Image (cartoon, rainbow, N blue to C red):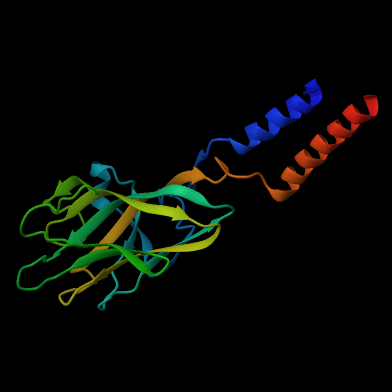
Length: 226
């Protein structure tokens, strides 16, 4: 095979085998703004939670109702993404009642309208556990009222996401959910990351066409010289 043709073939094969690139699609510690968030919720001082990995501000939702109104994170991906994860700090503030007389009190996450996480939190028993949770604080009165409080790091898998718009909703629910200063939650240090599309996939059609034309041109040159 002529050297030019061989080099172009190798370049095309390399383009087909480009590895996926790690990418951060959203990151916010809510110190400056609530950019990307909509729906229920507001920036608030994190009070004592700042001693447990939270910043000086977090994004708090104290909505009433069952389910209560959602805090909504909007994403717009320019290309498909794989192995996407959602990581954030969660403050379960005040009297989350779990399975006692006044519960349940669920914290939930939806991805594009489908519930991907729901857990009943309880300040009167013991910290919640699970492979997705790391306990930061449990029990001390660190927030807005006189009840105990809970803080966790949460790590959730979102799987693969197509290019385009996506929504992630954070909300509370349960027959015992009270909202307001009696029960609320806040999120902080939110990061959505994964692998950007491209690894192991065909290049864009225009790029593929250029490679094909180059290969055909190299073949024509070879024939004309024969």
